[in-house]
Image: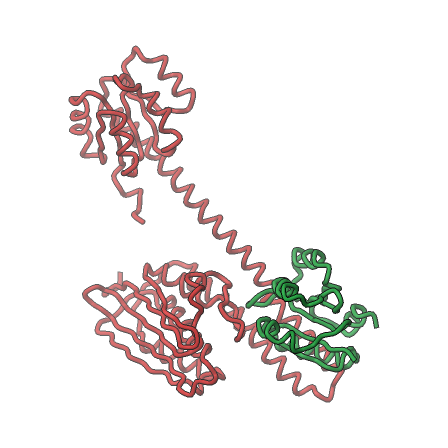
Length: 368
Length: 124
């Protein structure tokens, strides 16, 4: 999204007199993005197509007065700030309009250049502040909703292993002769809790915090990940193939790239089919220095994802399968990281055949 | 004697419940499932009779305990004559209230389940 505060302010000027329209544009085109309309119909069309921030309209027009026009568009386009241009004779109508809240300010005819510029700048301030507030509120609502989901999920995903632990401890009491077996179970359960907590930390570190641009050594990240994964029970039976072709130094957020690779490769290893003798995971990474895009493909010949899941798999705490344990944060973390890096992600999958994830991430070639 | 069917996606919880059932001699034939769809496939072959136990976990990824009950009811399994006991590690009051809406559910037990809780729920 363009940084709105750096754009020129978009002003729509409505006046039935051609000469006034041209004067207005000539006087102010240097400062603002000017759109002109000679009739209120033309004005309505422009409002539909362009993101107008300020509307300045003449009051006395043959087809419709300025105040009537404003009154009409309040429902369809409530956000642009409305300014009335008027001669002294219309003062009563204008005061009415201002009092009814339809009009922000009025400008007298003939206009004073300085006054117009100041008025438009002030009005734009109001418009842009309101717009930003609206966006921040939406982001806040989204954050609350995620927090709600997190709390509900924590109550299950953290509490469940704790309940299991207490159950096992109870069994040790009842069957002390089997203690060593139960201790093994306790280890497994605690491991699972630890992974969940680590995942949550990763999620906040990787997807919430702002970008940290540095040189990324992709091969090194892959080597570190595979080193870590060799302790996964599923790892020993899986063949991991790599095709890494990077012809330039990549500057990007290495934590986010690490999280993307880690979660996808981890899933590819974990969700294999036990009956498959040739379990394979392929890691294919290429850099395109002309387009400054990094493309990542992680593919496996494992369980696959049901096609009806679509984009739901990227939602927080979503799990597509019951067969293996998992928390449902992994793909959400991947999606958040890809979005924060302004990249794209898609996947192809067939049940019992395998899955491929495709990601492209733009990168820089110099540190900024 | 009685059969007990255990349905829970968490294998540790299944193990724990199996032990408790055996120790307290509540049933002598136990069938455990971590997948609700597998249960639906095999439920007829289990030949359940009056008073048999059905322990169902509420929170499961494939389908939750309530959805499973609905499916079983659609298959005309006589839930009212069985001892349907829901289990959950959830302490969310919404989950607890929901259990009361299902008349075939005899009790909702909160994990970790103890011998005492099990005996109280099965009136032995």
